[in-house]
Length: 396
Ligand code: SAH
Image (cartoon, rainbow, N blue to C red; front, top):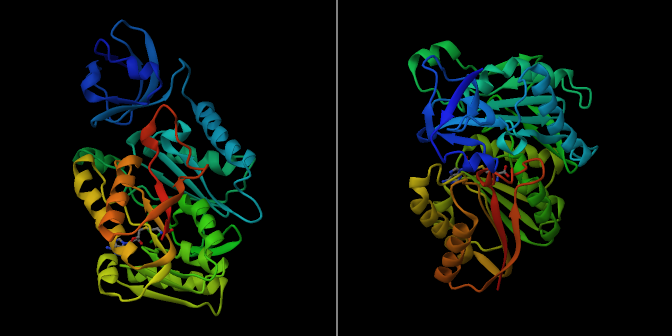
């Protein structure tokens, strides 16, 4: 195994189990080292610190073990089994729910790997060359695992894998497709007894936003007799739950016509005659131009900031969007507002919503603070794995 030696004093964060090593911390590495290699990491004094994947970017190494142990097929089998066992022990998969994130990158000590489970099918997304190279093994281990029946594994790494140089692009040649088996698309899944069509081949991410499951359920609880507006609806997850909770009416909005068609189909799959309408529109324009008011609005936009330099602009966008939505909420109404930008801290998001309420001149109270669910665990040593935050507000 290749060895990397750090500069003096650069081992502190690793001793606290932070899994990232930035390129500036590296004093020496073998000349032949290549993106995708597994490396042992040593302190400047030669002490063993951990084992990780070398990527060559600004996050040069992603550590996955802090023990000096062999990294072979059994190692990955154990890691995967730990992730699966946790989900099964927590009853996250049941007769009511057959969709779940099985592997959540750093949160499951498998940096660079996402595996989502959709009713017998698994969809993989890799974010590092090393994990990309491990796909055949991961796919086989998923199929062979004794605890959860999986019959097909689809790889969707083409867009998530960042490749630095042309030679690597030719060598790796990422192309989405089945690694094992096959599955007809769309595939129907069940979440808290609601049915949804999932299309991982064409949809965003792995086809469904699993991370909103428990927040959707909370919404169901409060939806009765309310006129609901679901902005950025994508598959219509929140719309279906609102109808399940006996909303008076639901209007779903998304800028993508495919998302709106999918929302319509998902609503029909659960409720043939629902009081539901769906509109293709830009969220900002819709809120600006509409005269309608609602008793409950959901704002679940895409990540406004993907990188730290975009943070200020993103916070402005959250502020404007939330202010516009607060203008449209009747007294005694609710706002479910989210940010899924990993670079937006919880406190900053809350401040943006606070400013929005001040601009809109509405007195609001925080009823709930929402986050990602148990199948998206946060590695306590890696706060960066926490990305989803949301507030439920009572609007007077
Ligand atoms: N709430 C959804 C996930 C939202 S993903 C769920 O529970 O599954 C973000 C969605 O926002 C995408 O479907 C995307 O098409 C849509 N979108 C992006 N920019 C938009 C805009 N300016 N106006 C309206 N929709 C937008």
